[in-house]
Length: 144
Ligand code: FES
Image 1 (cartoon, rainbow, N blue to C red):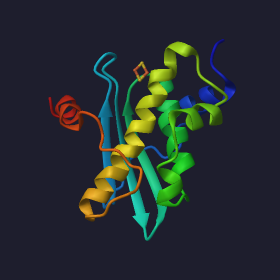
Image 2 (cartoon, rainbow, N blue to C red):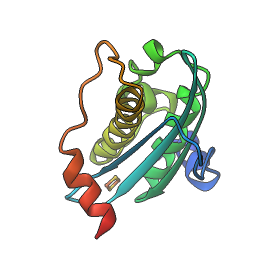
Image 3 (cartoon, helix red, strand yellow):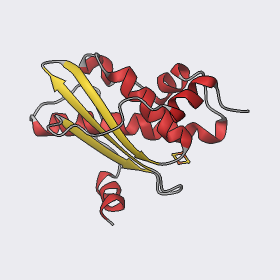
């Protein structure tokens, strides 16, 4: 078995599945190669990420990393939230097999895209936050 117990746990019992209706920011990303899609909703109040939910159409590692990514971001300040990387998500899951690392990158990108959306909606600049790559393209994947 190449998956850690934590990965299996978050795959079988994913935390924070769903959507937030009045989300402060929503990020949708997709991986064109495997076709997996991840959507993250954030509720931000003041400077704090109060809640996070996700919907992932993807492989087991994509589900597990989305679940862990939402767990990690809840309660963080925006400044801390933008520092969550695929590495932090993987570490929190006790690692992923090398062929599954790209799945954790999707989780990182989804968080960043949701934070970017929040910044755009509120006309603010979050220092150190990059615009999501190819976001229009990702939206296409969803709408098609
Ligand atoms: Fe694509 Fe996991 S195989 S996200």
